[in-house]
Amino acid sequence: MSSFQIVALMVVAYIIVIAAVSFIARKAGATSEGFVRGGRVFPAAVIGLFMASEVVGTTASIGTAQGAFTYGISAAWNLGALGIGFIVFAVLFARRFKQLDEVTISGALERGYGVGVRRAASVIMIVSLLLVATAAYVSGGAMISALLRIDANWAVVIVGVLSSVYVVIGGMRSVIYTNLINVFVKVVGIVVVAVSAYSAAGGYEHISVSLPSKMLDWDGVGWNQIGAWLIAGGGAMFATQYVVQAMTAVDNEAKARNAGFYTSLVLIPYGFLAALIGVCAAVVHPDIDSIQALPTMVVRLSPILQGIAVTGLIASVFGLISALTIGASTLLLKDFYQPYFNPSDNERKAVRFARLSTLGCGLIPVAAALGASDVLGMTFLAKALRASLAVFVVLMFRRPSYGSRQGALAALCLSLPAVIGWYAAGDPFGIDNAYIAILTPLLVMTIAQLIGRGTKASAPLARTPSTAATASVADSCRETARTDT
Image 1 (cartoon, rainbow, N blue to C red):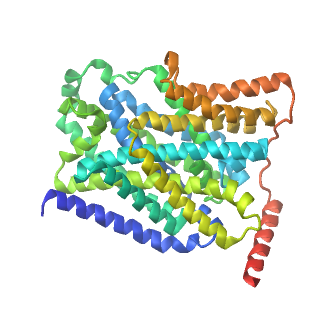
Image 2 (cartoon, one colour; image 1 turned 120 degrees about the vertical axis):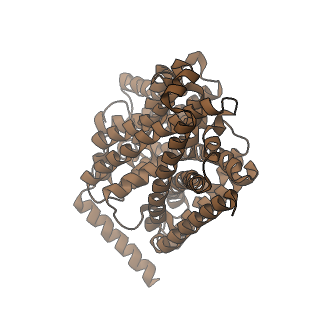
Image 3 (cartoon, rainbow, N blue to C red; image 1 turned 180 degrees about the vertical axis):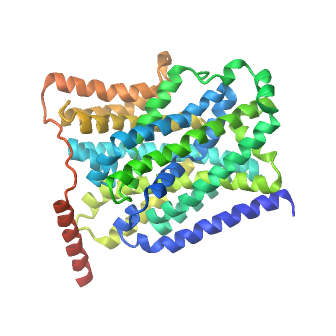
């Protein structure tokens, strides 16, 4: 059996396992709430690994290696910033989000800033998630094309269809279960590639004499870029849809906090390993295109190890896309379809829309991916947009009286064109768009604070047992009505 056949067989076996898990979990998606919440509570470690799997996609793996190929080991800050962000999230915000028990970030922001901000935040988050999905398809397509020897465009289409369909089958529970498999396969795969790449590069001594010394400096990429990663990456974790959605799948505040710590334990070392692969590729294959840094090192492996690595990289695509699609479809369902097109809360219509929107959110970025190339830039543009929302998360929980509801709405409406425009202009004056994402809402809210006009924001109230019981009774009444009908 050829090495290609061995790799293909291992990939097919992985896809069959993922499909089987989704099929088993399909009953949890029979209702709209089950589809978006998972239908049960999970241990903190499970949710922590689930969130890590969501973050460690192809843009994190291939994008970090790509950055390290050019700038050196300091590209590890790309993922390290996310790990730090999850630590801050765990300490300061996980408990607060669990108290709110909101399944969307926009629903949480509505508690402090009103329904207008909810709609605007939802639009920004959907745009952000679809941008990340586009970047995931670009890097995933490039990787699969190189490793499985198929056309890159066809690789994008195949990944888009497969990763979207298995989420449609099982909803949030299938995403959680399959991402547990994905994170294990990813970690094993990245370790295998990193060890092989380090050996191929001749170890530290040979790497240090083969590359400029700046390639091995932890600040080689520049503190301006590292700061932008900390803001856009770490800050984005405070206001990411699939992170907030995951918080509803644990049953108490302590588990919500611990889940954030578990996530950081995966992200920080994973970032170092991905960056190490990029540095080693710069030694072994200095003339290749930077985006091929990781795939090229995979090709050097023995057939079995290559199969493990390729399966891990494909798991990176599936894990990330599943989180993005379920997050975007949840926002569309909760913030637009239910209030405007299904006010009577018809469960059958809600489930049908949840499934169709999940499929759509998985396939729309496929078209965009066919003409895109800047993986890291696109990813951090998306994180910058979420960092704008993180400003309001911090203010809502820490300074709820700062600014006004009208100022918050104006700030969000300005942030989207400001950040995208700054990115499109090439980050003028060397100022990264992440800083624009933070400064724009802060400036607008400060003006609103100084003017002193408009309705003040309010501290979001935790969901008390009484309100939870009321909601449960209301849900039961609706279920009874549907049954009677």
